[in-house]
Length: 430
Image (tube, rainbow, N blue to C red; front, side, top):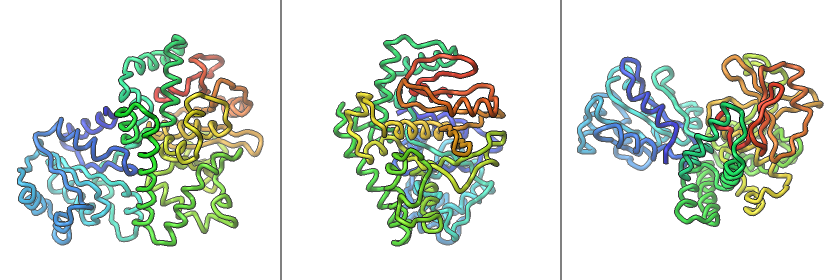
């Protein structure tokens, strides 16, 4: 599968004087190991791959002396491969399981910057948050890998030409031919069901059946739950799991703001706040903060006490919610499809590097997403179908006079009065 992160990896490889060791972060099973091994095979003469969670012998090398020259000699002896600057890629996988390996990246940066070394971690955010971990601040470069976005999904389906047509239509805001528009909608609905986890997409591509997808999705969710038990205390893991399991019910409410009482009667931020933070650090949820003012810089107006939680992958949400595959694929009117659509939008925006915010004006108006793009503030209204009547966007526009706003729906491209009408399937262009 072609991934957009490959361009970032190539840029990192070709840096000369300022290249730092690289950390690829992201939730479990988003494709970190696969993409790094593929990158190594295509761009280097040889690859030294070490899984620090399973290869305890090599993990033990990091217990005492972590001088890079010593470690490099040990890695050569263990693997039988020469490590040559500029020709060898060293991959340290599951680095969150070995604290000293994480610390060693500082010394690789300072003493042997000529070597290409990259680390990957599924629960790195959780591990770093533990008191005993010392993160090499300023000595590493970090990239986050998300599930495949919709454009990457189209590439996996062999629809590269359709991607080009969508991008062209977005540039001109001219409607796509209806046949292409309908094809894109059909593929978008398939994506809502399958999601962007590589294993789920592979299962569908191999069998051509949607029936195999939930089996893989259940396995992924089971692995998430296993991580909650492994990387948190028994008491904390119960609370983390309760928060995670409540997400479909949270999103089904008219007011999608996360409410602790939905998790447990009498629930509070004191009781569940750290559980939310664990899920966020693990990358399995996406946190969308509320703002009451939409000015640059948008981050300073965030209300830390109010937020929405979305699942990191829309396919996992549709499976976990229990909504039928037929409902998702047919586009039948269903109230919960509004929540599914919002989750899709959150996932696509996060994968493009946007911080997630929503705007609320007292109790009179609420806008689904607000982005800061350079120095521009952009309001985004999300509609699950073709019915697009709403007053919240008008209130936002009248209050802040943005250069333009975006309405996402199943309608074709168009533009009027500084409002861009963008089909949901074209969100990767924003």
